[in-house]
Every structure is written in structure tokens, then in C-alpha cells.
Amino acid sequence: MRERGKQLAGYPPVDDPSVAWHDVVVDGPHGPIPTRIFTPTAKASRPRAIYLHTHGGGYVMWGGLDVPHNLNTATAKDNDCIVVAPDFRLPPEHPFPVPLEDCFAAFQWTAKNAAAIGGRPGKICIGGGCTGGNLAAAVTLMARDAGGPMPAAQCLQATVFDARCEYLSMYENSEGYMLSRDDDQWVIEQYLQDMEHRFDWRASPILAKTMKGLPPTLIRVGEWDVLRDEGIAYANRCRDAGVDVTLTLVPGESHSQNPQHAREAAVEMAAFLKKYVGPDAA
Image (cartoon, rainbow, N blue to C red; front, side):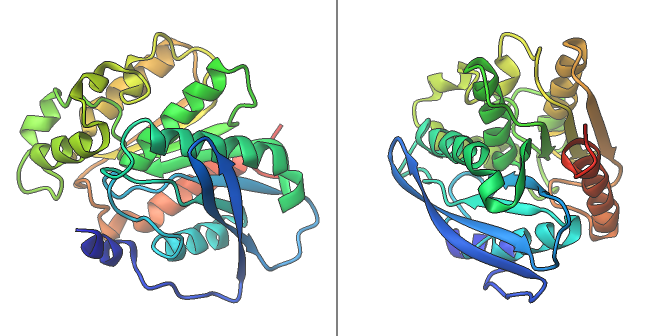
């Protein structure tokens, strides 16, 4: 499965002269966290936005700094931003909450070192797709509850917001749309191992007591994704709490991005980053 995951991520890595990268080691509660930092090589007149990418891969895949390398390079290039990509520990070898705690440590390190890596202190967007979005959403809630520092924005794509897997779209789109309900349950089982953790908001961010105080949030999910309805529900909970939310429901798209929508998705993310964490963001 992990070999298949590499193919889906666009492995092996290919360097782009427009983006430089270097590796650092972040101290975490479970030991060192290898982390790769991607920076556009073009000279910047002002500090750049930072995007902390908590990668997807169904929790169990995409481990290793090289696996999401091409995706992170493209993000840095397309958005003229710095990408920080932690290689957090993966289940089943390292079950919940270890991966989440690694990601939280990576966020805290990034917030502390933003200026040193060429970024804007206090202007960090955290995000990811699927299970990476789950980790990003939980880190943001943890940061809020800890009293800061906080992400300035979060970008959550086709995200697992609820480990209970009991939404209408789970059944409507259960077969034939890349990610099935059984697949979703399986990866959640690998992550949690004790399924009672489904009711812990750190595993199911939608169960947090309140969404009040969360930063501007972009949620993008496909019409045919099993995760569609929990994405809509999370957006509604955020709106009810006064959070600035952009919800994009993509017609004709499953859990896997429709190539016809790739440019649209990139433009939307670029505009979101520019507005909330870019050089001119308040």
C-alpha cells in the first residue's frame, strides 16, 4: 500500500530550480521530526507567507520527506510561499495521538522560527488533504485551546472531519468514487486502533465543543466524495461560530481531484493564501 501511495503522490522527487529546499529536525514529544522547508529562489522584497503542509495519504502512507516532495515544490512555486513539510510518524506503528502531536510540535516550531526561515511571523496557513486536513484542523483547535500562537488560516481539502463515518454521502458515494466508506473506516482504524477515540474531538474535529475563535478557513470537497457531507457540516459549524469560511463544493468530482478542476483549485488556494497570509494581509 505504501508503494502505491508513492505513485499517487508523484514520487520520485524532481527538483525545480525555482524552488530551493533544505531539511531541519524539529524536536517533538515522541522524538525528532524530520522536516523539509521549500523556499522560492526568486528574491523577495518582503517576508513570504508560510504554508505548513500536513500531508494526506490515508494516515498510513506518504511517509518520508521525498514522497510529497513534488507536491510541496509545486505549492511553493505556485503561491510564492514557504512550505514547511513535517515527516510526522505514521500509524499503525505510531497510532493516535502520536501523528497529531508531531504535527502540533511542527506548527509550534514554525511559529517560533517563522522570521528565521524568511516568513511572516503570525501569518501561517496550515492545511492538507483528506487525513492531512484532519490533522491540520485538529492542530488549529489545539493551538486555539492552548492560547496561541494560532494559524492565521487553514486550508482543508477533502478532509476527514468525523471519524464516525455516518453521513449520507458515505452511503450515496460509497462505491465507485475512488474512496469508499470501507476504505475510510479502514484507515481510521489504523490510526485510532481503539475506536472509542472516534468520539475524541482531536480525532473528529467536528466534535469540538465550539469552533469560536478559529481562523479563516477554506474547505473544498467533491460532490461525489464520501466526505462531502462532513465537510459541509464542518463549514456550517464554523459559520455558526462566526468563523470566516469559504466552502467550495466541486461538481462532478470524487475524492480524487478531477484534472479538469486542478487549475481552478490552484487559483482558489492562491487567492486564499494571498488574502489571509500574504505580504499584504492585515
